[in-house]
Image (cartoon, rainbow, N blue to C red; front, side, top):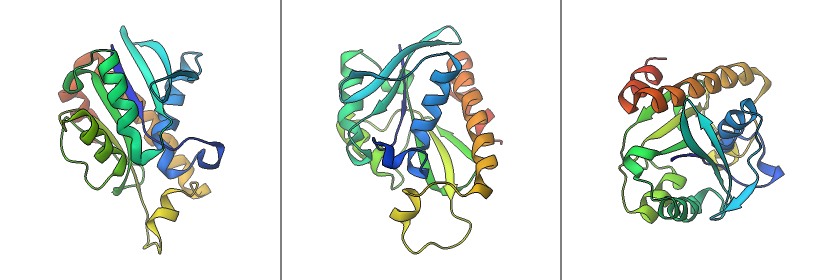
Length: 188
């Protein structure tokens, strides 16, 4: 089984905020399959689906961003998942321009607290992550407020296009592996 984990914060207050792009993407994947992510497991909302002949567990940790590792660690252990092969974590990234995607097969947290928590809890940074760009076009006074704010109307088309490409990158990962997914996503 593949774990596709979208990071975000639970609660309506955070719906459609920049920091919840991970939730938005896994919800889109579920919606396209006529599913809803609502079963509780390991401090997460989850849904089993089949994407490109792969059995996947779509995951939305309910621990808040900074404690995402608690949920992911539980699921990795429970489902006997090798993080380097069968875990994909989806995060927002303030260092990437809005609309850009990047996939890495492994690496540091890059300052992202959700990734820091996961690395700490599962004991490795050897797992793929899909980064979705949200970098502001101009300097912002408070980065925390910025990531917890909703997208401006001028950003919505870029975000929709990015999410479409991110879905295609996930399919590429499932069908052809991480290297093909990297080549696809990182050249957009």
